[in-house]
Image (tube, rainbow, N blue to C red; front, side, top):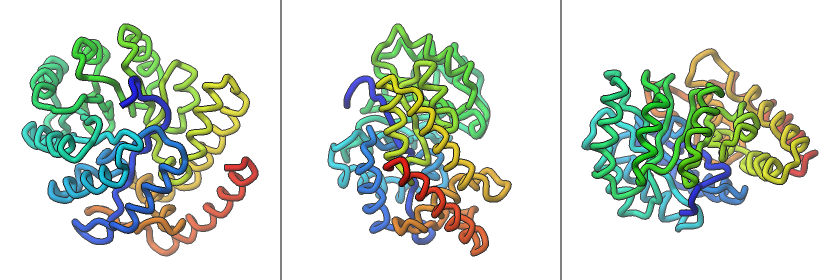
Length: 307
């Protein structure tokens, strides 16, 4: 794996066709669709991938299928976040066996741990992992943040190799970017794509952007424009990223609307099924028709930008 990993690393959705059953054909189409957009890697079994809602059996099947199809064309990062230490380690071993490049872990999310306990958790977990580890800061869902003191602690471990920050707190993000200057191999990725341009301006290395499941080239070209110093073009593309967010992530008032919106849009694009892991369900007919209408508008706008 290129070090540091930079660019767009989409958090792959997990295409399902029924409870505990993958949409295999849809998964194959989705992977090729995303890779054709020029992304730098794939992150599987994260929040967008509904990782914690999937059985361990299905997670293993999914990891294996993704790694076989990707076939080292880009790095595959595997989410191993769990409340059970042993299960995180077991999944990491399986990921290594089938060809993944790295694993990703957020803080265990049921009983909140203090920062000293979180640091000790990392100290115990890393020796059990056959692959390097990215930290995943997702306090809205885990209730615990990788505070900067814990990030600083992680920097001393050569087998922890980066951070995905989904807090949405740009002050935190800026401090993290400043802190990692002692580790030039340590990328810091932004989760919320609505802040992708701002994160790049602060020195971030790329984005783990859910919308890159839909329109991967849009996000890749934004990062490339920023790297080339074409800030006007990057800002123009950021406006389209915001349009994607506004169009598909806020249909309904629940947090699950983001994943439902991405999956429904993928279904409308003819890529994969939009079955959701329980307790969630796919959009109803009225919501789906709204997605279709907005999708037509977005596709027309992107066509004008040659995307």
